[in-house]
Length: 187
Image (cartoon, rainbow, N blue to C red; front, side, top):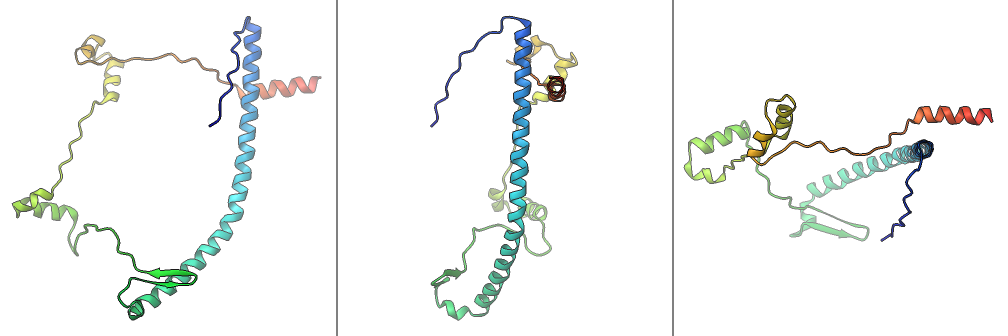
């Protein structure tokens, strides 16, 4: 587990210092964006170079797996009473999957549900009813914003609508780049 080193927080003393700090934040953000873009481009190139090779290998494995499966299905006596055969380089066999409920030919789940409801009361234990009840927060916010409901009315049911203020720094990446390039060219 890495330990985070806390750096002392120094409050800016003037507007110029704040402007300088915002400029430094913008430059750091630009560098981070560039670094991330470089990383992403390299990863994309690596992924593309390996994707072609992986597809060829996966296709070959799929064809060979199908050939082995066809042999296994046409030679059930090779398995005797087992579900698998152990070879020096691998095992082939049949696995029993997890049980699943599916419909028979010409039936749908809706038709089966209706049959369970209407014809056989003993089948009702297999019918699940889902009821979802939750507060529609979006509707409350919309009504509050449109002044259709007041804070007092919300308080009666134990609710309130809040809007927090959060401090942020939003770097102007393109403007900062332009200023830095112009400053560097002038020097």
